[in-house]
Image 1 (spheres, rainbow over the protein chains, first blue to last red):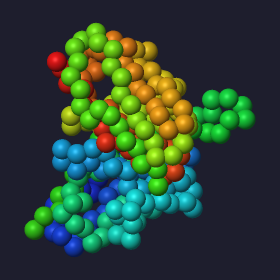
Image 2: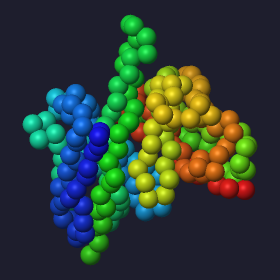
Image 3: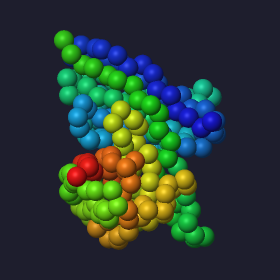
Length: 127
Length: 106
């Protein structure tokens, strides 16, 4: 079964750190970009970071740039999100998502969408 | 960065209704738009990728269209299991989401 499983969430004080993990199984993990997406209580989805298959291209949302670091270990089929200088407004459920890839016609570019999601891990930042 | 503006933020509809949700991008990004469905307490589920391609296993009552900056998700005949929140997402530049549309029972 193709799946992603997040872990590492919990309660942390403002200014603290936490490391989230996302473990993949049932597919060739090293062939896929992986994203982190979060959802604050009662709010919409917010994309926060992605890392390409080999890890050589990384992007962050402005809201987390300089505080969060994404990395991956393809030998362990895992992606990580190191979160430092946590703030109350980082409180959310954090999802990892695989970026599927499709080529609709020969010669077309590839199209990407988040086709496999983990169940999410809850992060609460509070004193 | 590309901004995605989704409308309406919520709507009330009845079973069997045709429902349309729109998403406007801050620049032309065709066809790098995807649509997701999320139910309370669950992870999002991919419905449509590349603006109009139906993800495997998704019912054919869901369809996507649009080009340039304006994109639409249509549910041709709303079913009880379709009451949920829907999000658009762009994969043109980084990976931002629209604000979401909650579809509620009238």
